Image (cartoon, rainbow, N blue to C red):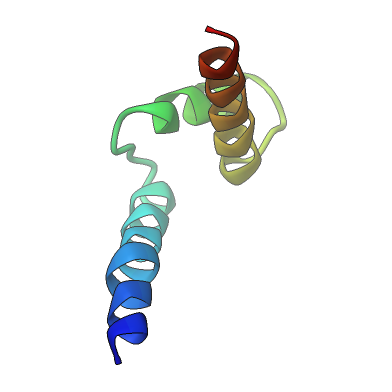
Length: 64
């Protein structure tokens, strides 16, 4: 039961909230903004842009 609650509150609710925001063209801030800028000026979709920006930030933190 505890694992199901953890799954629900840690993964499903944030994913649903992000999906609703992206569907209406909004952003929650952070790396979402970078993903939306990539979508606007390139043919990269929001999900891939979010992954690219998160990987770049993670790699830069690793090397810092």
